[in-house]
Amino acid sequence: MLKTLTPFTIESQLAEYPKPLIERPEIIPVEHYEAIKNAGGYLWPVGSRTIDGAAQHDSDYDFLVLSKDRIPDVFGKLGYDLLLGGAHYDPSEGRFNSWRLGFVNFIATDEIEFVKRFLVANEAAKRMSLKSRNDRVTLFQAVLYCRVADEPKASVLRGDALDGE
Image (cartoon, rainbow, N blue to C red; front, top):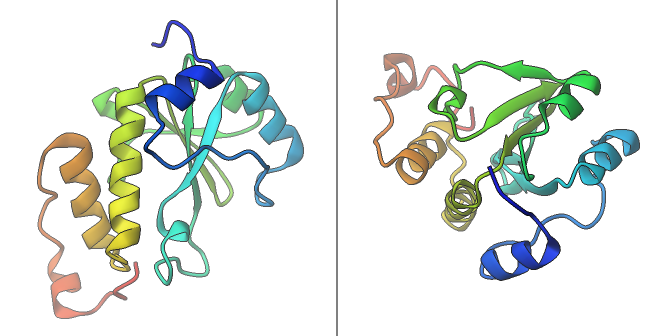
């Protein structure tokens, strides 16, 4: 957990990384955005919707959230459900919590180093134009956890699944 989190902390420790949002994305209701910001949260858009051509029509809108603590009470009061694994980000590994409501997913952490790694992985995925979900999972697993993701399922190797999934 961070001792303090101020605009100076963000600017000094994350100077070479993408800047956090300064305006509310349309997909996030005003009261949700304000509650997260009032709790000291800083948000970054991440995931397939930030990569040209990677998102499907039903893809989530993912946001990385850095705050002094993971503000579970805020997400809970707003109606978001805590996700418990089963994704390529593994909440059980302890560095973040993932909260979902509808098509909005918040990856909440209180660790600047996790934010740096996550933003590096997302930026690399953007620069490499990784449209394949399996490729993005492999990249995020490597950058976040220093491990290679499990092999894709046989159906993916046969081409039964869409490449962008």
